[in-house]
Image (tube, rainbow, N blue to C red; front, side):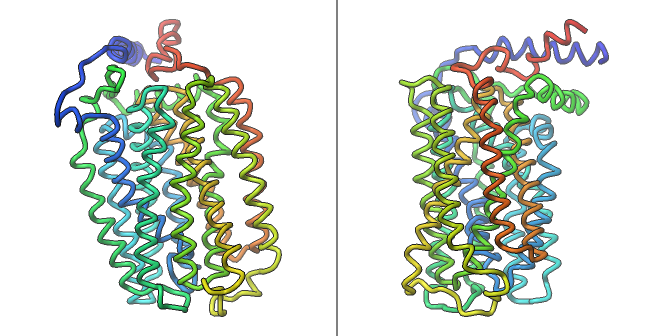
Amino acid sequence: MSPELLEEKGDSAATIDSASHESSQRPKGLRGVYYHPVTQAMMLGFTCFLCPGIYNALTGLGGGGQVDATTSANSLSALYAALAFVAFFAGTLNNMIGPKRTLLLGTLGYALYIGSYLAINIHPGAGDFVVASGAFLGATAALLWTAQGSLLLSYATEAQKGVYICIFWAIFSLGAVVGSAVSFGQNFHLTDNGVGNGTYVGLLILALIGVTVPLFMADPQRMVRTDGTKIVIARQSTWRTEFYGLWIALRTDPMVLLLFPMFFASNYFYTWQFNDYNSALFNIRARSLNNFVYWTSQIVGSGAMGFVLDQHRLRRRTRAFIGWFILLGGAFTVHIWAYFYQRTYTRESIPPSAQKMDIYDSAFPAHVWLMILYGLFDAMWQTMTMWLIGAMSNDTNKLAIFSGFYHSMQAAGAAGVWRLDAVGTPYMTIFVSTWCLVAVALVLVLPMIYYRVKDHTTMEDEALVQIDQASSKAT
């Protein structure tokens, strides 16, 4: 490595070392409320409430609310393929232009994607537009989620990360709850298998509002945590330095690789839940209600897991293992239950035009409880995953890179499984692969929890640039 680059990184490390533990007085009055980390975490949550939350309400309908789910599955495959590629480098872009600008850019694709479903509802030949919109959304969503991860986990102190994740996830999930409620109200008197234009218009308006929220958020460099420590955003001056930082993050913290299967699984299971269960078995009224209870239960699931992970009377390592056992029990509970339903139907036995289960059918209550449990499990899985990332560092730059890894692997899994669904892979095959992937991910993350999760984040974990300082001096 060149002396110039070493000097640049060494200077950055010195800056972070002196600034990250600097105690600052927090502002008072209304400014104190605005600049409070909880306020900014809530604004971050409302950004995701109005963009990915509304997107989740759309995809949770199964097939994007369409009668034939093939176009939706192809668009989601394109979306997650683009997200997987861009997210791997999104942490680098986030550190170059700053998380606030990255977040703003990340909101731009959601309204276009929702609008594409309105377009295909009006013009059935607009399938290519839906797929292209999905690819564009994938690129922008990578930016949004990377900025979200770096901001949320850096605003919280070590003792607050579970609570902050819980606050964010509750507000974010509320977006899908509201969107699902809009859909359920719009489609309550319908018994067919597709939604009307009014549903898409309502969701589109909400997504457009979401683009404006990042404009009103505070500059992260002016933020002070509740313990008085400043949040340091160390902007690197060159792309070369930033890409080197990406390599350093992997080289100096290889345990993050054991989280990759957990990342990969975190969106993989949506395909079976939404398309191969909700869309396959239920009419649009029942799908809308399933979607509503699924995202409502997410608020409870995130809150419960956040409560467990922030029990200060227990060591952080102990909390990590408790969270792992909760996920293990949840994984086998929901998949064993789901197996008894999945073995009763195939793609061939329930074509898209078939008369499907309604909310007044006697079998519906038991089936809707499975959606509730899946919602609880999903929220717990995502909360635990973000908490484990947060346990590895408090540095915004490093968290941005790890968040990029998270969403890149997450999207890679989703892209693959949505494509499998689009080409007609048997439901049982997708279901079994989902179950196996979740189980393997839980086994592989155990060594990471045992060796990497410490009771307190050390100085070596505090700043990405500082991590490499020793190797730079040795060189």
